[in-house]
Length: 308
Ligand SMILES: C[S@@+](CC[C@H](N)C(=O)[O-])C[C@H]1O[C@@H](n2cnc3c(N)ncnc32)[C@H](O)[C@@H]1O
Image (cartoon, rainbow, N blue to C red):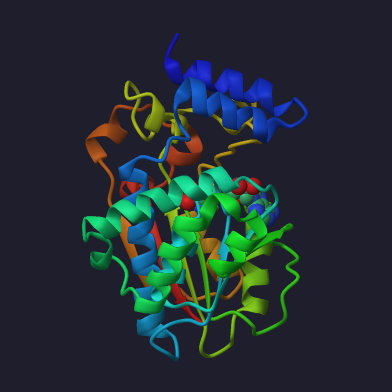
């Protein structure tokens, strides 16, 4: 049996259990090794932090946002810590589950420390000297501090809530961002979330910046399948394979664009990876995808920037 099928079966089973996100963390940590913070993952998200800040500098009203909101915290708060080092005053990170921990933030800081020591970080973030000092002090005193204080020093506030209804005031956020999160939220929930972002982001001066990974995430773990493997399944088949702990909506770029249009949100700049047409041609697509232009289906990643 292919590795990805085994993973799908195990995650589907876990998704029916109580404490499924915790169990999934240990499954991914000890079996699939999917939660290990690799250099590839760390520098990918650091690249996102850099691109979000560049998007704001280009389309926002100031050089640097003061208040940011991130959708989908994940295990390692790389983007919020990058924002802290750049001098952002506050980053809210919203998620329906609390996935990070003191241990995982320490793992993240270890990566930052290496990037600082090797002088790599300044290629990504325009580091404020004062913030660097604060980070180093935090690093040295880390073990003695409670999680709440660590987050407060890093100017991160977690919002454990549904992003469709945020506990944030209208026009209070300079930069809304997300990192490989849209693809995990089905459109019936995602569209109201993005509409809610329209309420909290500052009108006429705020920016939204979202990275979307449209590849089949099972292919990240099982190299024997392509990033288009999941497009062979009908909606009914996919509903049986997909799971609630790490769902994948399979939306393509045209679906996201239609969603933006439906809520009257402009896309002022987009950077897309065209994907691989030869690989796509090896997959017998389900009708839903076969009816779309092949170049549209092939696009594997995109960064959408919207000026409010
Ligand atoms: C793949 S994870 C985030 C990945 C992370 N940003 C990264 O860089 O690796 C997607 C997250 O979206 C969260 N999520 C799903 N629906 C949500 C909702 N309605 N409101 C807030 N968060 C939600 C999930 O709990 C999950 O933690």
